[in-house]
Image 1 (tube, rainbow, N blue to C red):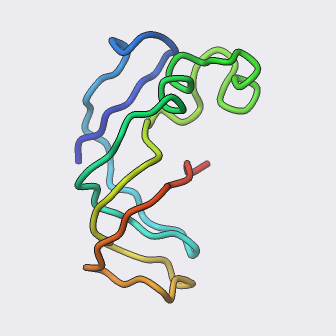
Image 2: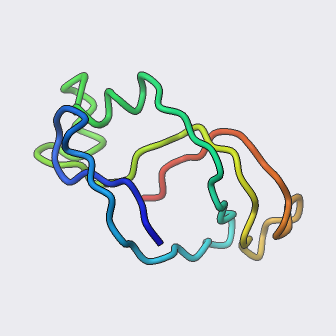
Image 3: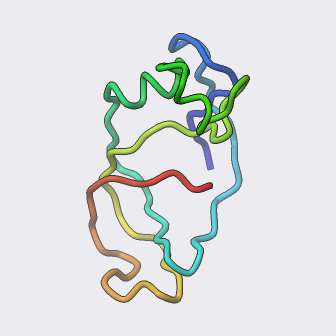
Length: 100
């Protein structure tokens, strides 16, 4: 699977398209095949490491989570054992939290 990732803070040219392994949803998570995503000021701030105080949570010298994106729309591909409101094949949209 391909994903847009970044391994250092900076301008948009730090983004790379790489092959990554498909994640496996934990008990309280759903795996979504993303059909559409948006880029917003939150994504730009995380990518640049701004405000600088945010690096305390996201990685001081380089980002802990190298994936971008919060707003998504797509289709559920898999669910954890505690998920009861969604099943594979459901169309969904909303905000995703970053996996830690």
